[in-house]
Amino acid sequence: MNQLTRFFWFCSGANFSILKRTPTECNKYFGIGATVFFTGVLAALAAGYALHTVFQSLLPAVLFGMLWGLMIFNLDRFIVSSMRKKERAWEEWRLAIPRLVLAVLLALVISKPLELKMFEREINRKLDERKTEFIAQSKANLAKGFPEIQELESRIEALKAEVSEAEAFRDQLQKEYDAERFGEKTSGTSGIVGLGTNAKKKEQQLDAAQLALNTLRSRNQVRIDTLEAQIREFMALRQVEFEKQQPGIEGFDGLAARMDGLSGLTSESSAMALANIFIMLLFIAIETAPIFVKLISPRGPYDELLELHEEKVKLFKGEKWVIAKGESDARVGYFQDTHFYATDLKKEKTNRKNRAETDRELANWD
Image (cartoon, rainbow, N blue to C red; front, side, top):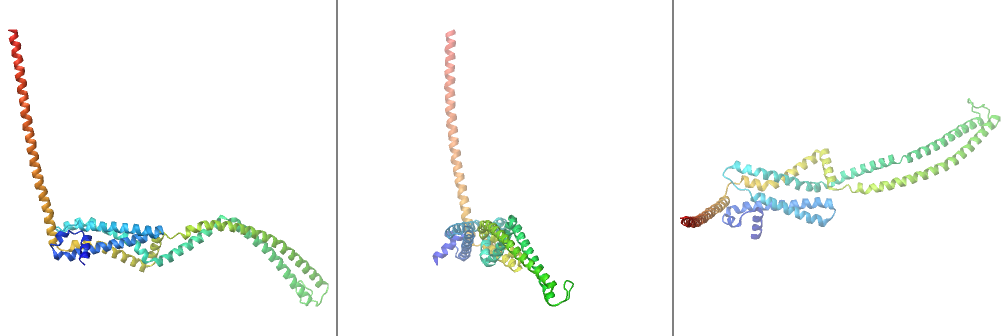
């Protein structure tokens, strides 16, 4: 338990030596450190899932997820440890606003992959719908790219329609022949029962129509078989093109696709949108909790001792600066004094030498 306490103190960025002197502050920084630690854990899980969606591999997702979690943990620890309790509340909030903005951004980044995981089933259903739409659209585009198939199919339909017309004509002659045999009076029959002259003529017409129909069927069937073979060739080419596009459609499962699916679900369902908002608010509350704890908590003995320690450092720095400056001034003064004295002696010797030479020159002239 002692090791766990020290670990969470470390996560909060507190000074151990000062914190041990303030037992009443231990629990507060224990809670702050635990919040920072679990925020890093959630960030690692979120990043791991997001990267697993991108790379489709476990090892890179685990490694990069741990790296991201450590980075978020270190950043949160720095944000919390760099905050200082001031005498004025407004000054604390003014300094905390940039940290709060950064914490909110981190919360949004952390929450999004976990939202994708929470709504994974619904998103998968949405992605399946999108894949079905892409397949239908791809087939429609490929159909436009192979107009020969439609042309051949229309020719087959024309040949079948020609056979149907011949069958209808044969059926009409069959009805007239039957009506003539059985004595049914119509505009095209005599109304006499039996195989008379008109019945034989109807029979000859029926036999000729049946022969023509059989010939037309055989001829058109050969043409239809040829056209269907050509259609199968074009359909094979179209299937090859579709199979080339199939991996791209099946691979529509990346991070951007899932985020687009989540966006579509939230726009379609108010319940999903409300759940999405609450999840984001939850992570924002978790991420900003250490900062708000520091802000709303009263100034305690730990803050007093920490400020005293920092002020002592400032005083010690000032003392060292004054001492160093005095020593520097003394050395500069000594240098200036000794340097100017040597310069004056040199000038005096030069003047004496010049006067002596001048005196010798005057004596020689005399």
